Length: 241
Ligand code: BJW
Ligand code: ZN
Image (tube, rainbow, N blue to C red; front, side, top):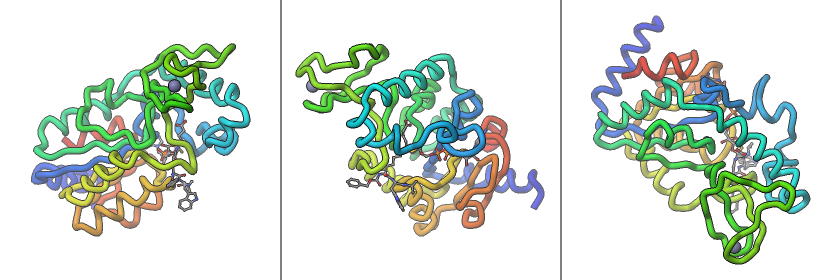
């Protein structure tokens, strides 16, 4: 099928869908200038995941981990949503039953205006107390003293799901329910390598959903989905509407 025919087919499926679930990953924010994790320019090229994105790393050296997150926050503070984030807001507005599931922690979907949103891996703009577990919004991290909880004095950590940590049970359950009951699932800009997010596509497919993938490169999903569109998220997602 030609690219045009593939797009027509994706549009037709989406137009007749009552229920749509979307899964996004770092690739959708790459078009806003946010670095992805894997690949040639990815964050893991210069840093080892296990040195920074695990609870053990934070226990070993909280300052190093906080420095990394502060640096990423500085980059993110200069970034804004792109045409792909905006298109998903419009898709939500014209779909009866819609859920946007993101692995991203950058907050760009919320900034764009998405509301029926599940943030699987947390939110880089929130912190959590390692003692009393209180979660708060926080934009200011004093690196010299490290941030501490106003309530109990405990050390604050990023409100992010690191490797080896469980996802929020309610968020995961809602996401599984959404993919199991959708007519169409759209997957945008994820390598599909990280679990449990990686099990959402097979769950949707097993329940009869029509699955559409948008990615710059082929992924483990590409040969399994109904339609795989190769290109930039900011160019292709708006064309789905
Ligand atoms: C574009 C584009 C453009 C670029 N347009 N496209 C073996 C088997 C199964 C599981 C495991 C296993 N070994 C270990 C595990 C578990 C582990 C895991 O999955 N590891 C894998 C690496 C194998 N998972 C976990 O540990 C999870 N927890 C868990 O399993 O808990 C179990 C448990 C239960 C009960 C009690 C206790 C524990 C937690 C996973 C948390 C992941 N967190 C991270 C880091 C957050 C830190 C941070 O942000 O600071 O989340 S990992 C990192 O990867 C981040 C992302 O959300 C996630 C996914 O990455 P994503 O979004 O796919 O990005 P990339 O970079 O990989 O891909 C970008 C894509 O975009 C590419 O395909 C490009 O082509 C494309 N692209 N530009 C369109 N313009
Ligand atoms: Zn506390």
